[in-house]
Image 1: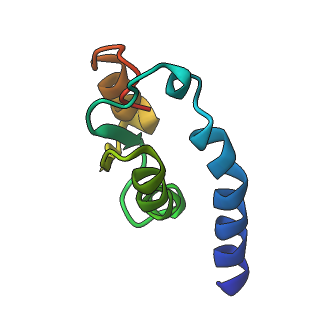
Image 2: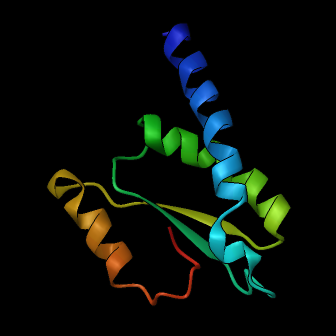
Length: 93
């Protein structure tokens, strides 16, 4: 169990630079509102834990709240459909 936790932390540290340098972030005034981080898996799983670990750092860097939403079910289809229904303003990923 400890090895898995170490691997999750390592994965989060590798993913953080990619999220912090999000291409939309280069636009002036982005983010102008809360950012939604949709996780298509059940809360408490590896992806949800990594998202919860990244959210406070992203909030600090971007200056806007990052809200983690778990949308499990349908072999990730429900989460992906939720993301597709949001406006394409770059405030959700």
